[in-house]
Length: 435
Image (tube, rainbow, N blue to C red; front, side, top):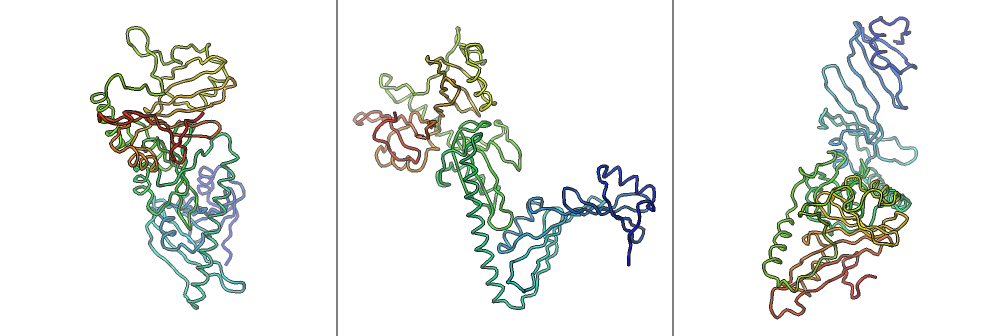
């Protein structure tokens, strides 16, 4: 039975309310049933249908949604319970009583000539499963084989996607991924955050580098296997405190959880002050900020140098890369080169610029408790009982990154009483200091 109705025959209130709700929609097809008028149209190539009562009141809208538009809880459910199936289509229905429901169709690839088997799932507004309609297994053995084949295809897709992501990262100059590290080398706070907030996800990639928004920090990509494979990038500072999560938006530093390791850092400093002979105390490689007369902190506007003292190309590059830098203090290194010290998320950083405004080296203070596992194991074997006075991460333009550590011992017969150690970006001990 044809229920199609011309727009000219619609009740005036229905036409008016539709135009108010969908002002930019022009190509519309209408039908009617039981005094309910339904408009069928598309938005960005996705199908919509919106219904109105005879008095013009909007009653419901059903819209076609892509996989990434599905509510997160439903994506997780599909990935955990139907890992071998693929997303076919989905709908989101919103009603006048503010109720929302989701409908999803999943499928597994079948051999040519076989009937496609569709799994239909219904979720409430919170992503909780309300109903599942699964196809009958007429040939269980064949279904298992198809599912295994589908799983292998999904794994192959993951590998290809990872390669594409890597190629994209290698070709990107605005925000490099940086030095790749293993998940085991991440601070425990990072692992705990992912485990607590992203159940069912895995850490696919992890990097440590200079990022424009956050300075020297960790970039961690988490991703689900199977359905909903889009990666999520999380950022953490060198201590493991969360800097940004796209699902919770940016976290203000004062609200970020205090790293457990910070207590050990304070203890190290106190022990160094109490137990170490004054004449043996070494000066950290990262110099302290200059102070003005009277012991007051220098003016934060580029420290002891005025704006006019800093070449524009250097100043603009610094501001672009580190818009959240706090109290920058600049130093003229002669030959057109400049250094700047500043804080980001209460962590001290030092940059060295070339005359053309390119960052040559970045020094970032580190909490000793966040040093890589290989470094901590080496210290436990070769320098048992020694304390770490200072540690920093050094990132160089030539990518020959390394860690610098100052250690000392309270024992009178310690040999040596103190030492400066270098480790490469993988945490291996370096016999010679970097050039």
